[in-house]
Length: 362
Image (cartoon, rainbow, N blue to C red; front, side, top):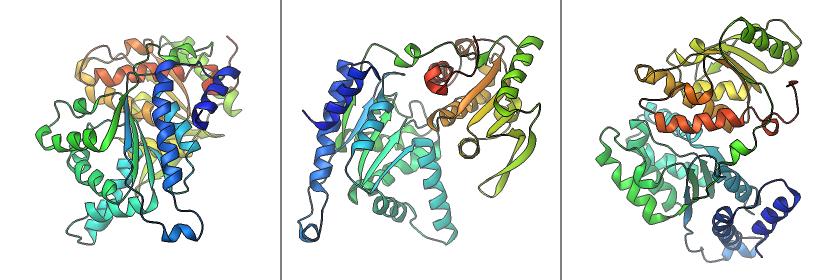
C-alpha cells in the first residue's frame, strides 16, 4: 500500500477524519505522483550525472465545496519528498506574480512573463495552488503564458478548484483569449473530479457562538464579551499595517486580535493584498455589522468572499455579527456561486475544530 494512502487510512482509523471512497481515489493519484517525484529527484553526487527525468504531469482536482480537496492536497504536499516545493493560495500566488511583473516592467523589461515563470520554476519544482478561481481579467490574460513557462521549466503543478477547467472565467471579459489556458490545463495536467456527496465542513460544526445574529444591542454586548475574553481589554489601539508601500488602517488591535466594521473591510476599495496583510499580522479578526446584501451590492459581496477566502486559508479565527445567518447574507446576484463556498467556510470557522479549544460557553 502506498505510504500516502497508509497515512490517510491510519488517520481515519484514529478518528481524525472520515474515510471516503471518493477521497481515496484522488489520493491514490496523488500517491503515484508523490512516488514519481521522489524517484525523479536527483540524490547525492551520482544524481548530478543522472539523465534528466521525463516531465511529470501534475493534477487539477475539482469538486464542490467541502469535499476535502484542500485536505488531500495538504496531505500530499507534506508527504512529498522534495525540498523545492511551495504550497500557496491562488490569490496569494497571483499577487506575488503581479509584484514580480511590476518590478521587471519598471526596469523596462520587454517580456516580463517568461523571466517571472523561469524564476518561480527555479524556486519550486512542485507548486501546489489551492482554490484556483479566475475572476480578474489581468490574471486571465497572463495565466496561459505563465503556466506554459512553469511547465516548460519543469515545475509540477497540483491545483484545487471548485470548478472544472471549462468553467473557469466563465462569462469573463474577452474570455476567448482565455480558452488556450483551459486547453493547456486539460492537456498538460490530469484533471480529476472529487465527487463525494458529503460537505465535511458542515459535519465539523460544533457549538461555538462566534457568528452572532441578529444585529442589535444584545449581539453587540456578546461581541464585546468575546473581545474581552480574547484580549483582556475593553478596547484595542489603532494601528497601521503596510500593504505594498501603503497603509491599511486597523481601528482596534490587541493581543493578536483586530476589530473592524463591515464598512471598514468591505465597503472600501480593498482587495487580496490588504486581506493577505491582515491575515499575516493577526490570528483573530472581528467583523461587526454584516448586512443582508442585495444584487446591487455585488462589490461588497465580492470583497466579503475574498476576505473570508484569505482568512480561511491562513487559518485565522473569525468572529462576526450579522443581520442574518451566513446563508441569508447574499441570496442572489453576481458571485452567488462563489458565495456558496463562503457560507460553508463561515460555518466551519465557527467549529470547535477550527478554534482548537472551547472559548465560548454555549
